[in-house]
Image 1 (cartoon, rainbow, N blue to C red):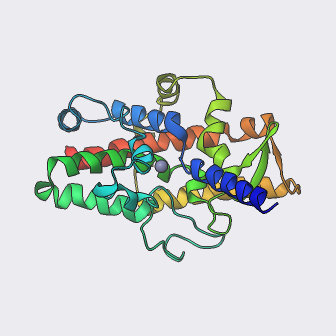
Image 2: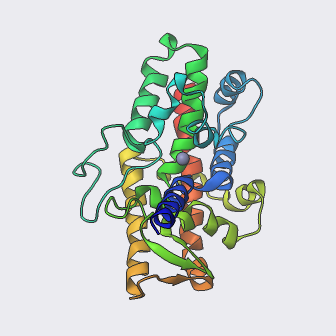
Length: 269
Ligand SMILES: [Zn+2]
């Protein structure tokens, strides 16, 4: 019995561990692909040189993969908490208790500051790492459950039925929503979403990381409200949920793409 309990415990831990990837690779690819369309020629050239001809799409999920790599002498394990910031209901980024290891908001602020104010002091490999991190983290900043509540570990402890399988609300938003909403490739997502006016693009990049994060917190609150409104202990989510929240998914991916382009142009142009 004890052994069974230990096995179950390790399965649950493994489940939670694997569900820590925001958006999943496809979501991050979509965000980076949209951003790539809006880089200035100068930013494009500099990024191309740093990444030795590879694209920001190519490296959009690098940060998720590197955190589990054995090459931790570079200190990538220190970035494990930089993918999210969990904020409980009624609190803001300003008032929430901060994770002492850093979070997605202050991580992005630090990296962007390094890449602007301290650029000349950085080695090329640091520039490359920081660039790849910014590309990934701006995506994470827009993933609703990466701005989820601290009390349920960013939706990891909120259990839901996704069609016929039990999972967490966090996991639904990592990759299940995007795969259920459309059967598109990342480039088809990019092509279909990236159709907003110049006015919209100008408007959406106003504010800073903290403002953008708080907008994601607001969107996450709608998801919690929805789940709670079902009155079920393990709410069943399926077609209706996909229909209701696909616009939110699309908006978050699109805005993340435009904002990432803005950040990279600020750094490299
Ligand atoms: Zn991540």
